[in-house]
Image (cartoon, rainbow, N blue to C red; front, side, top):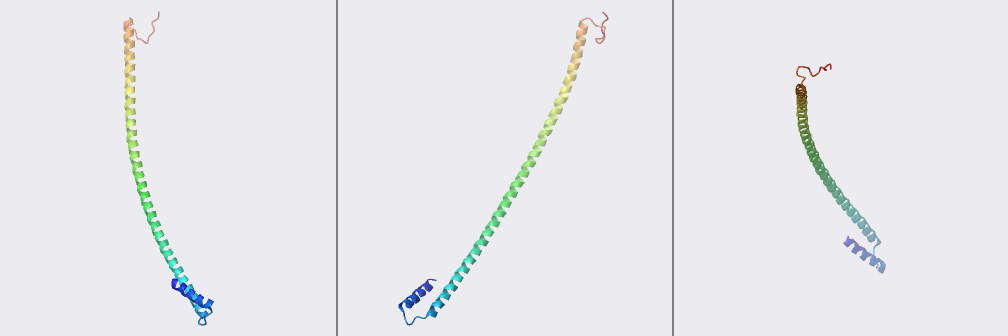
Amino acid sequence: MEALLSQFTFLSDQALQGNKNFDPSAMEDLMKLFEIESYKAWAALELEEEKQVKGAEITMQQAEDYFDSVMETAVDEFRRFEEEMERESKAELSGVDDTAEKVKKMGDLMEKGANIASKLYVEAATKSAGFNGLSPNKVHPS
């Protein structure tokens, strides 16, 4: 491109000085060379742009693949965590159920024990009050 500019300067100087050797068709030929050179530069830029676009597309695909991989790993880890929490909560619930059942049985036994103790207390109180032969459920006629 610099050589064309130098040639253009030379031809322009010839035209301005009125040089008899100046050929206007040489200027037209030079302009065609400028046009060809600019198309070459434009094509080179387009080619470079296509290379950069393809490079960017490849980079984007790699980034998407990496993102998908990371997301898949995170989802798998979350599922494993969720399953572990589910197992732990079931085990804990089972333990709580077992404890509740044991507490209920103990409460039932304590209730029976209290009923027995109450009956024995009533019998002992009745005997000590002198109602030995009478049933505590029967009322004395007096």
